[in-house]
Image 1: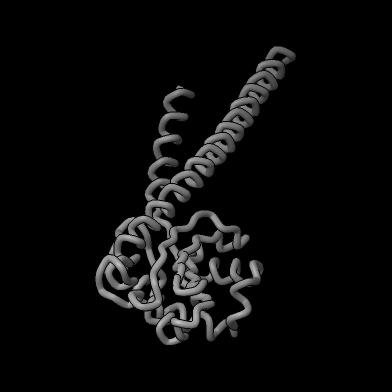
Image 2: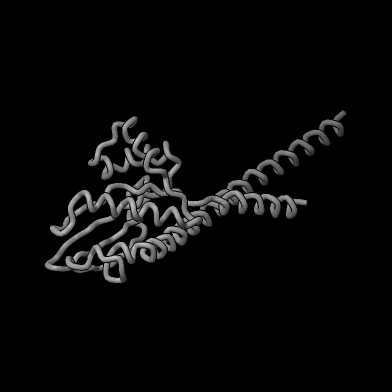
Length: 204
């Protein structure tokens, strides 16, 4: 009977935990490139949000919902580096991760990096990177961001899923261990009660 109950608990925990889709917040990009201005960085961020949203294995917080929440929280640009505030933001939005991009220029080469961060600790979990030249960065082909962003986003999502699956497995193990501990304590309590009742009737 115990084995049957444990199997049922394990099954429902698996459905509960592994049925969850990772939720991400795409935050403003950091620009350290002469060939890229703030407006262009904003366009790339929006393009990345759209590319991520096309993938059914992640859920992206809507830009309007995010903007409204940031306003209500009086969340400023410098707060993205404050893990206490990003944790509150994540709890409010029900988000697991932050997605942030950087555009860095060295000479004529521009490096575009997308980082996945834990929204509670801001630890970098994974990243993908691609290099472009200043002349071709906006080309809609394999040499520019518009032509490669979909592939870049797909590779990034793979990293998100890998990390999220790992965390789900760890969480499932903790939940199973906790449930097993409670079941054992409950079983011990029932046995103790039975022994006490038996002794009571024996004495009478």
